[in-house]
Length: 307
Image (cartoon, rainbow, N blue to C red; front, side, top):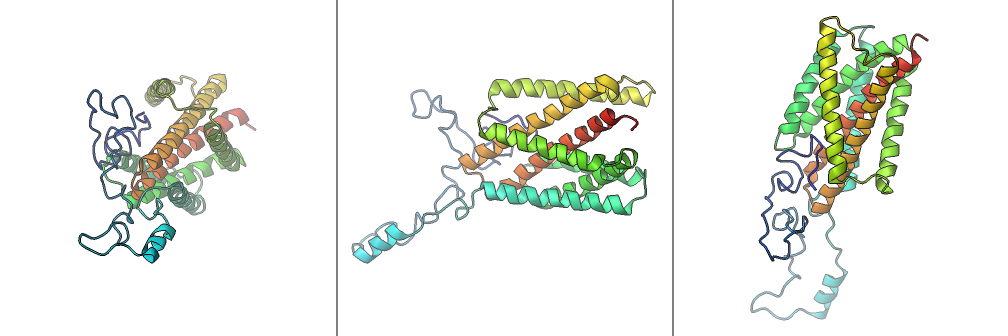
């Protein structure tokens, strides 16, 4: 199934249709072939260097033409030799995704801490510039065919700087809201991970279509609200009871994006995506967590009101 995650679904990412990061393309099976009707029948990594076992062509793997038969000692050595795992073959593993995601989030948090302590209160200038550049970088990374770890870390730094400045303003008005938003985001992440791993949530085509449709409607509504606010109109989407509903929907969509991320990572590992693609997975997870955190900040601010 093709992922609908905006990071994983385009050409060049690890999806079956594009051959996972562009390494090979899926061929349409002919009728009657073994892979006909089977979406997993044409693994794009079947004949590329990332999918091959480096031990396949070792001196003990085959008998040289015209050479002497293998000795008993050579056969025993072949039998006892460790098999090549994903790390040895350059394929992506779950550990790779965890490590890259941790590195990206640590960069984001460090930049946020810098903004928190370095910027004066209610200084939106630098935060706005950092947020705008981060948005442009995010778009470039999303549509870039090859993975660029420096760009991803730069995005994390700029986005973290903007979030740090914004969070400081919120925390000045509603003391303690920063830690509340962080804990709320962590709770959503943990709940979605448990639900996904236990099979409570299954990323099916129907589930994906419905979620993407709601997400598109939500984004369109927020754009309309933003344009209306520029002309002094208040649609009430970020305040009062309606604001609470909108905030809950926003957090729910962030959780939905996480489920797409989990499915895309699981699929990429199963298909033997290159190790470097773990950076793309880290970027997708970071985007989803940033979305949830921002929506959590807004929701908590509405719930706390003027206290």
